[in-house]
Amino acid sequence: MKNLVVINDRSVEFEVVDNGVFTTSLSVAAVFEKRHDNIIAQIRALPSDNFTALNFKVSEYVDTTGRKLPMYKITRDGFSLLVMGFTGERAYRWKIEFIAAFNKMEAMMRRGDSHLDALIDNMGALHEKIDKLQAKNSALAGELIEASRKYTAALERENELLRSARVSDMPLNALVLVGTGRKFSPSELQRAQKLKSQGLTNARIAQALGRNLSTVARNLRRARRSEYGLFGGAL
Image 1: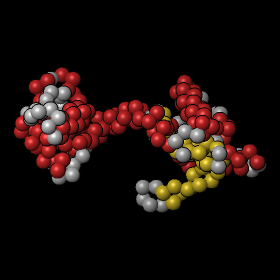
Image 2: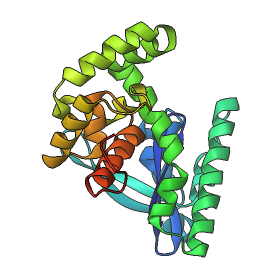
Image 3: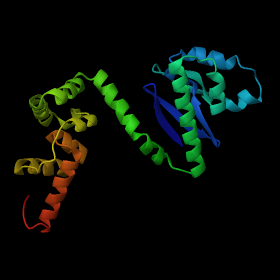
Image 4: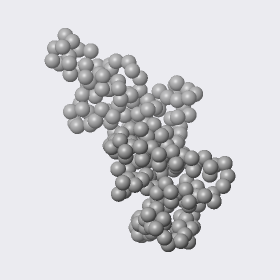
């Protein structure tokens, strides 16, 4: 069972291995803004005894160039020892967040909760991280966010661009920026049904039409019911 927790805008992985909860030296280095090779050196400098054997398990990862490099999987006790010397207000806050995440994973393990439960619990934090990354790395997303806050007219122009864009080129996260809850026009409903017949998901249809996901699902559902005579006619 694995779980992701966002600490200091970094995705920190926690994993249950052999009835123990582990994070990684990579995550520790990223959150505390330290070089990973220095974290590795600090771990290797610890005494070779039963404590280090139980709480620091050597592993490896593949970097962006395809190289296999060493890392360590670290328990809560190992983490506490490793970061003992990290000082400062921010380091203190990150330590607390790590420990809270360890506690949560251990409680989940005792209850036998599923991986899906962990993902749902952290969905809000992950969405927030995605939004931040998109705002930083995507000029289009940044323009849409700024326009949605200041100008309704600018938002409508962006919606028109999204409606005319190819569905396959549009990011799923654009869904949260466009669309209203009003009922489809006949032309919108016809286009939505055509896209649905081509195998597109409701999310992709929402992107193509510049509508939110719930509006697309509701209008298609009503259209299907109408076809079977449940509502006595078209929308």
